Length: 246
Image (cartoon, rainbow, N blue to C red; front, side, top):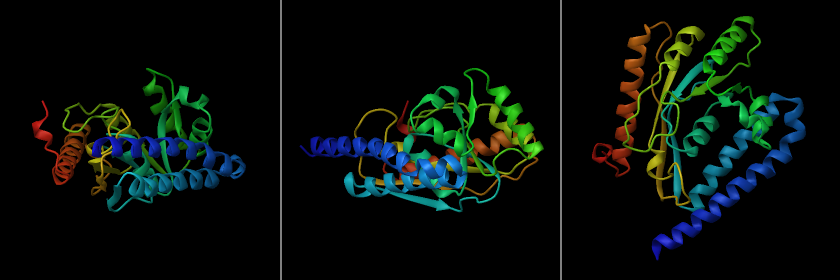
């Protein structure tokens, strides 16, 4: 019975979450069309809305730890569900992503993605996007802000092992920017798929930055070691043993 009630609460929460994406998108659209600040404000307002409603609708509190960067850096984050995207973006002043080009045609989402400075990528052509991004930075035409990437390339369930992809080190080297690692435990409460949301404390933690200029191998080893160690500890604090997953 308790599970059924929580599932119904989760269903209502998920429904209103996507409904409010449309509502806020339309409300802010006139401002967002003419101003990147308008688009960023709309997206950050939505992030706050989701975190607030998660707290009282399904009992899922959210907490951001560490120091979110405000300068032009690359953020390399553990990715477990939609919630870590929301929490990280909501914590920084000018977040942007590398996004699939197909998302450009998604109502609201595509238009806002372009306005906040996301970089659209054709499937299988990520290297071209990296070259263009580096060139835009060199020319000064890229939107300033915090580039949020996911080194494992996709959502990874808690406790599941997955490699860190070499594209992360290419971006780190070519952009010449500091990297801020981010750990999380959100997947313990908000899974990759499904409706059910578990009550608890979802955390994203901004770890000490890795300065620009390290050799690729050293950078990747440090990034993976720090993110995985911190994420595993956050999951253990939440009552989930990542070492028990096979």
